[in-house]
Length: 453
Ligand SMILES: Cc1ncc(COP(=O)(O)O)c(C=O)c1O
Image 1 (cartoon, rainbow, N blue to C red):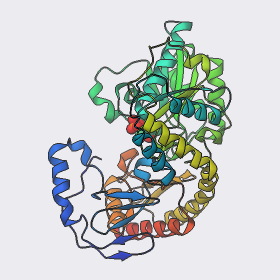
Image 2: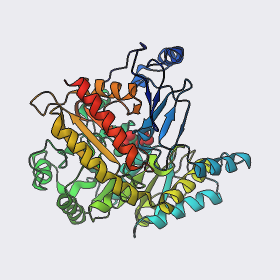
Image 3: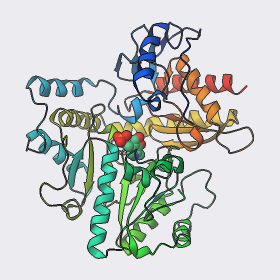
Image 4: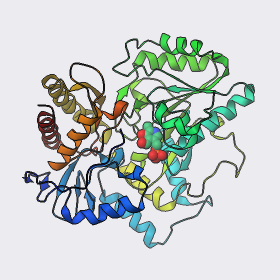
């Protein structure tokens, strides 16, 4: 975990197809001064991604300044759902900038009104109030705050937040504490004893996927169920693209109802069509009390949202739950154009159809190469978990090499994520077509074959 790709230009095979073009060494020799500048002036933590110096990005392609073009299986980091540089999104941004209207804090604006109305109309009843923020992590902080605020109204002890092992909810204090990756929390020191994690039932390594594990783990941890104010789960776990079993999700909903706890779905990755449905929780046939959005909401500019039942969202008095950049006009305009595009072009349905092609191709690759331990996903989000020979132990080093080879061949993946840093995550823009999927999967296969001979 936590490695940087070497700044050493390597001779690679030249590539020229409809979707990929590699005409230089990788990393590009001329890009090294830029990469060195970043390494000099940014914290080391920023140097984790493959060494592609982005110059522009359009549709399903990313370009550098030296003639190379990548087929993008990353969407940045699951952001550009309606495609990179979607012309309608760009037009909406330009209009707002040329007006000019760049900032208005929490003063009213028509564009913010239109965006919250749009999201509320797309959200199922009774989740009809929307609070705009800037990043995903902030929406999780806000969800925690709302769960605990409501809990305290019932009893001062009703403050336990339950979440899942291996979960990722962001990098701020609260979002890391409800996250389920212990190594990310070491710095916190005094962890909140009322934030507890239970095993994630969708994890392919998890033997018992029944809801009994939830109940028994909480009992073992000495949690009084009536003290739980909220249960937070990613709709699917970002690290593995693994989903909850449907029956488990339904029992979880019943449990929350029985114990007056809110169910919160973190839809920051899953929302806006990524999983083949507009909202990921539609796969489970249950409704959350609160859900959080980010990433694909705008396909580019930073904006995020918390959506919930009005009586929850209205817990705070005027002026006491706000943010400097809430509903920034440029970001809001871009989000409206993006959401309209996703709905008009029926991108969730398209993602569902394209997902079937990935499912087939990736499982074919898994059958052929034992290094691929698990394939999980739905719609246009997938993960291949790379394992050590004849085990289910994650192999982060091999995954790191496979990503490097893909990038050298013109397929853009971000650095491996998830348990042991061993998941190759696949998440192209939702406008991708069949031939590009087949081409990208063949590159992944070649890279695995070359790395794992
Ligand atoms: C599921 C999930 N929740 C929360 C976050 C945090 O979002 P942000 O990086 O915008 O703070 C992420 C980001 O990767 C995520 O994938």
